[in-house]
Image 1 (cartoon, one colour):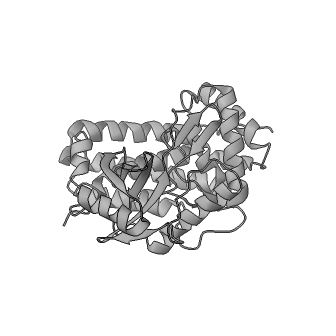
Image 2 (cartoon, one colour):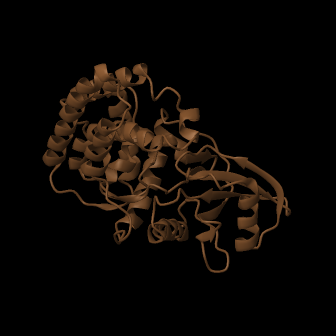
Length: 326
């Protein structure tokens, strides 16, 4: 059975009304999300909330609750994180075989990450998130590691019928090469402090207003090195990234000390994201939303481009890391 086959508008509205005691006016709109199903739902009061229905069997209830508790902890410290709403003393609810949560609806625009002031602002807030994140570990959520972000997705792709026959050996060889380079970078970085992270702090998970950022979607929160929440602010050529890094860390260092050894991991983490993304698409291909939304995935051109991206990352992993002298 497909993971969301039973999730229809009637179930969604009934879940919100029966579990949370809210009265819906019947309107709902699907929002951009593939791992979970997320909807804007209008209430009879005239306001709207965001309902997230978690992908079945992805996280344990304890792991989801830990995400909620982390968001609430950050919000209690007056950090601009959109935390789940509480109904009947709970943030995690279950109805019709689905677990779900409601959050306030927040507006905003994509942050301008080519603006030094915006980058400094981002750095300050991420540092404050990390200052809270370092106070205790997650107990039920995973750690960002090479096994789950590289070895497992590569093996899944190789064991599945996605890579065209004429590219199979090339993909296997290039993937093995970049993973070995990632391992060397990780080793060169040495022992790193693992803290609670946002985990997926890209521009799409930041809503920018005149008052600054709102961080949303802690669904990928996990333990890991602080730089995981910073490198996604960097883009462009090496010169551009170096300038962006300085702006981010100027803001970050106002609230938390940054370990410069973690700079060894920037290209390793970027490569892990590329490798993991291909494996994620492969694992989710039985969800009808994925072939419809990513028709390019199961094509010759996709795997040609993916192999090229991995080769480019192999070269990037041989370059010296970016520098921070703060």
